[in-house]
Image (cartoon, rainbow, N blue to C red; front, side):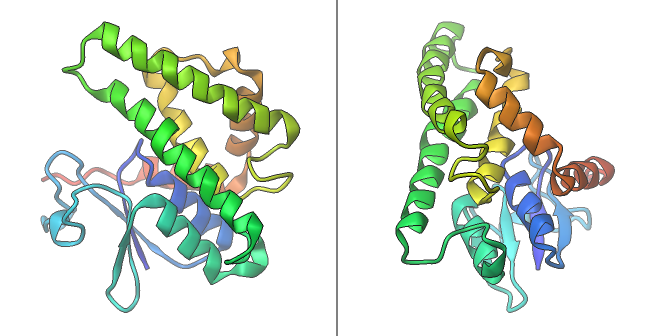
Length: 206
């Protein structure tokens, strides 16, 4: 498999999960501005949507959208328990979390990257985001991870997008449960390995 990634994006979440699962894969860095790869080829030929993550399978199929990729990977090694069994109530709860992270946390933080958005509008959306943080806190005060006491794929996704808070003067220490979650996640060997591998890979020159 090939995982197409760019640093400081949500593609970190499938990268973490691949390492948690111990699956073989090739890491391919994308220039997010030019949409070029290191060999000069066009990432849009891989994913016409133009954004990471994209997972290319051995048969040539390309899977996009983080929640879909995460569940696909977890199902390759169901014995690891990174996602509950398909069709179970617990799997539906996982999908509920993945949708919440996508629509409320990922999208809410992504708005803050928009340089054309007036500061007062950004602040309005930031306050809405903080209300959503309250829902995360309720879960993480009950358990160490979103779906219970064990790490799962939703945690990798949440971790990847919450890392963006450092760009926007959002101090997660204001939400101790979120700060503690981030510390637990950063301490995981797979997370450390993924971050180190992404830092070590040079950006495409194109």
